[in-house]
Image (cartoon, rainbow, N blue to C red):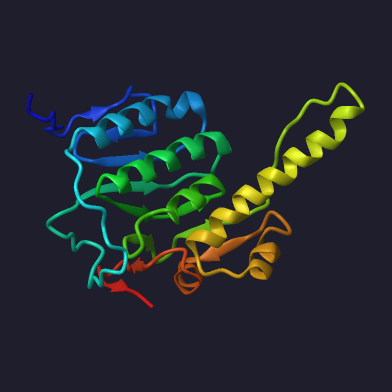
Length: 221
């Protein structure tokens, strides 16, 4: 049977939701990373990825002159992020789908027009190297994050504490893997709730590859 493809410009989501996937290979995360808000987006993203036949994995060492330059052998998925963050388990589901897409030859092009905080920040940096864009007035917010545990027994206290440490280590690993930030710099950012990074600082630290200026020009390192 022929491979199913998405066509047209209709939006694949319930109209009241702000997080959605459109049929032209675009994903919009404009709200919290919450299961109820992202369930339909996750399902549609999975279907979107499998709608195209597998292609060779993109070579991230490929030199490009613009984030809008796409090799003929690859398909691009645009992900627009303007979110204050949310639940790490939801981020993990979308990150998994990013990995699946990359394994099937997709280029993940992330765009942060204004604000990517917490999970939004961690998702934006997982775009394909060379294809991560920020607006000139956009910001990332990097923080320690938190876990919520109910403790009923004394034996659970240490386990709850370990769960918090595991969460902190998992989020730290993402930043250290996908950016050029050093561990001391990251710890400083995560020392309070004001770990804001300007687009220029993000470019320097490898949180993005391009700044799209309001005059239409692109700026890289």
